[in-house]
Length: 161
Ligand SMILES: CC(C)(COP(=O)(O)OP(=O)(O)OC[C@H]1O[C@@H](n2cnc3c(N)ncnc32)[C@H](O)[C@@H]1OP(=O)(O)O)[C@@H](O)C(=O)NCCC(=O)NCCS
Image (cartoon, rainbow, N blue to C red; front, side, top):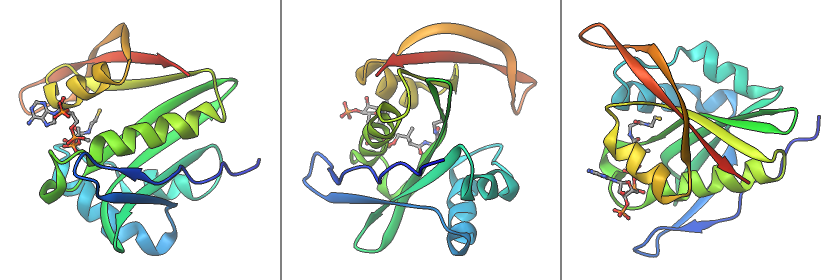
């Protein structure tokens, strides 16, 4: 399979340039540390290792060599899925998440006709971002996520590419 090209450079609303490159094995400790900082139920390292080849890829968002965030996209049969997206706490609320999402959309556009994702129903911040970027609700998965008090539903969103 041909690896897709790196998404184009994006700029946050303050004009900060964000560049993208693919995850390598050397990045795993830093990416795991970020994942643990922002997720109540973080991915295991093996899930990131799955991004080192095959139809699932992790792209890092960088500014002046610093890791600001990452996103993971998979694709098959004309459909793509955004499996993970995260911004380090110190850089949240500055437009980096939107840059990552737009980069994921650009990447998916070269591989698929539709992009899906799942999101916790309580994740208002992420939902707001997704709706602003033209995602729409296509379903709900009951008790999909582990939570602190029992399980939590996932909304399934999609965006035409
Ligand atoms: C969700 C996440 C990726 C967003 O990244 P971010 O860099 O903070 O987001 P941005 O600054 O690009 O903001 C984009 C939009 O999100 C929404 N948003 C951001 N912060 C918000 C907040 N505190 N409250 C409500 N909405 C918020 C706004 O609509 C914002 O757009 P606007 O401010 O331009 O109107 C980031 O918060 C994160 O890493 N969260 C933890 C991991 C996670 O939940 N991932 C999603 C899994 S589905």
